[in-house]
Figure 1 (tube, rainbow, N blue to C red):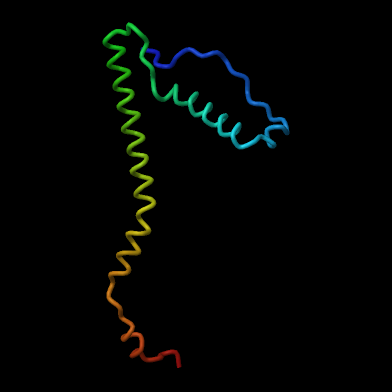
Figure 2 (figure 1 turned 180 degrees about the horizontal axis):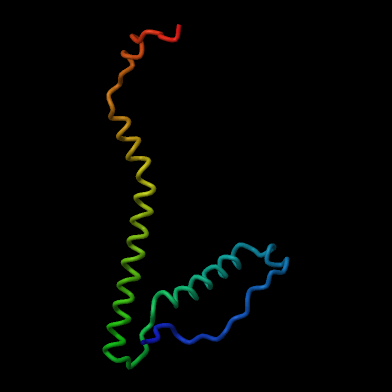
Length: 109
């Protein structure tokens, strides 16, 4: 098999000191971006210089799968968000039957 992730040095776990709770927004944002970049290296493979054609094909196929997966995930999120609005539009198109409600007989007595 081919290794598509670059070798990295082991990292220490982030500290859980109380200082982290007092972190300012910009440093927290930087930390989140650093984490996202680190995780992204494992999802989006890099091609080493002078790679063989087989490795190049494998990396390209993997990148295509990542793009397809993210596209399907975003489409699913879009459907989840749009569904209530579509149902509202469908309910709004139903005919109004208020005149039938006024002519019903009270059968509880």
